[in-house]
Length: 263
Image 1: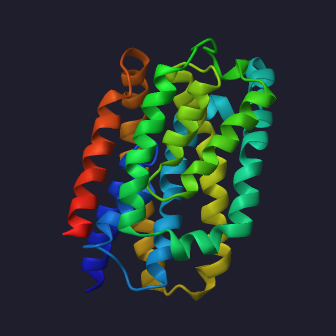
Image 2 (image 1 turned 45 degrees about the vertical axis):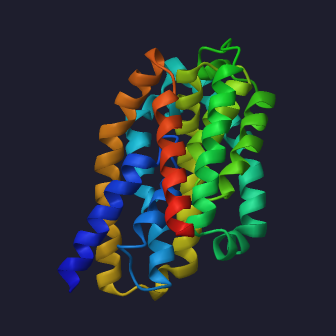
């Protein structure tokens, strides 16, 4: 039974790591997969949040130069990144701290995910069509633009909309190129998800058994490995091509889920 739990954790970790930084909604996919693979509550809800921390570690390692304030050659650039990240996550912290439990209780459902997948696809399509693409470097983002992106990121509180889609789309509507919007979304995701995972650990971690801690570690490991393998190729892809494949995928998946829900 314990080994089966470890296999579940590995599978869910892969789902999380692959989808976390793509504009397809990792939370939405976990909710969908949880229809077949899940742990007993309340551990399952905690697992879905904490497993994101593996993907965070992958991004921090891949973009360490963007976070490393001790790199004297890039210190000014890194300080700008930190300023923008802090400004951008303020709206998410306020809304999450105020309404987080309500959102998790009332919005985490397949129906909500289905609708949000389609709405998020339309948002991403609109953003890409209306982007000026004048900001080509993350270090060129000003504080006001960072705040706008942070406000757009609030759309991701609807499970299935996708934090990445919200911040990438918001970035493009704020003048960032496709690749720059994706890169800033990655940088922004680390502290945002770290805050969510850290809060969940503080709230529930002391009640976990040794086996549950082992399950979490396996989930985070596979989340890390899969995210590490996905992020760089994704950036290379969007530097040359549009988000159209992800938009189509979201619409098709959302429509299929709606049909299955109402049948």
